[in-house]
Image 1 (cartoon, rainbow, N blue to C red):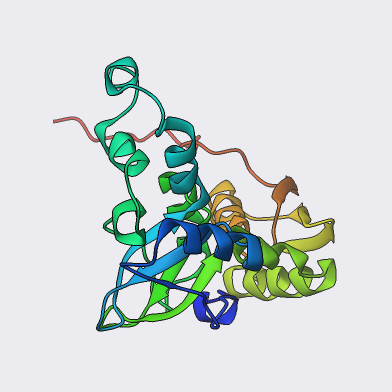
Image 2: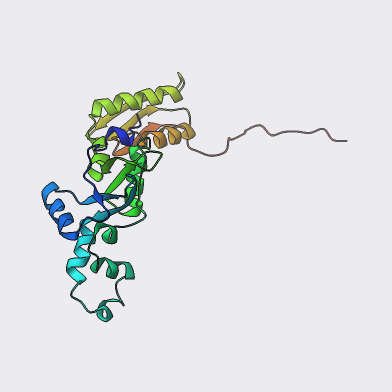
Length: 225
């Protein structure tokens, strides 16, 4: 199972036009209880994102003298403090994702770029939805039995009749126990199981030969001239 962004995103998205004034944006945040809005141009393409943090910059910095804060704040933040519309406030270019990307892709982007929402756009850059951290984390609501069944199916694809690997899952933590014919097999299975949606951690309780070169007991002898 590899959930796509389109399966967890919100398709009914509140968005802003470039010339939406600051007061209207603030009112929309209060009304809809979200933390970010995509900003669209006249063709419906996403050109930026305006967040609560962008509005806070204006509230926190607009009455400060530029010379007092320029040494510790980026110039972009000073510009936001003077902004009056969504086009001036927004962060651009936007960090976006496609409907076909996976939830794992979305989580990685959110973590690395430190954002809470990602506008979801089609091949032409038009807005089709938005995905939040809560949407991404929804994969961890899978039942333990659902996860166990997927892990068992994955294990069966990789093992031979000589392997006797059993699986238990509790609160998303997968435990592998029994025996396997090689440490390489266990490493491969463990790696794949970690990427199964809903898995919190993997515990290896398997018996298998230690890694290392094969040991040869026979000493080769060669004829002498």
